[in-house]
Image (cartoon, rainbow, N blue to C red; front, top):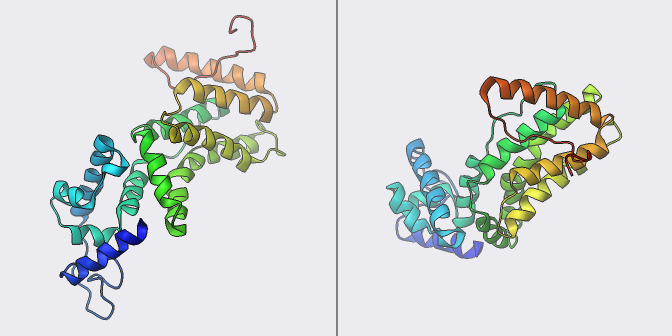
Length: 252
């Protein structure tokens, strides 16, 4: 599939279009032209995300993206060599979430970090990920880009929070943080690959399960989290992911 997109790019070149290889014109040795228009970049990303939501991954075509973005197919090819690269870039822009919070409360910060990522992740229809991955797995370069664009943001969302928790003494130093990140990421992406996103309640359970095994004193972390949650509820009446003590009889 990726080879077909590249072949199409070269056919565009033969018709007077441009490809992403070479210089700005797509042909080595030819003088570079004017810089890329950032407004077109923005319009292309918006059109790609719009089509992805409406029609799913297989419904995204470079021709339709170009039409909606008010540009041309050669202009699309100058930016991305095919559909997979185009969609990966669009998803990457959506998953560029803010830096995780640092309140000093490990449970609070883990919950907020994961919520920030999941809020962005859920804006992409889940079936798009499986179709995109099926195409990317055939091309080593696209596969690597998929891991960086789709998988890594979920790990990045909580990595810093876990490392701070280790430094504070909330999480044991012998815990393999990278394995914890694998577990958290796998829950989010496994659900999406089978057609549904990880919801807040399930995310809460994942954090609770992991911290019960990784924390030095889980009860103390829970107490700290509950105290801060009550303060926040008193302030604005709302909260994001919260952790309840499911080990107590009342929680059962």
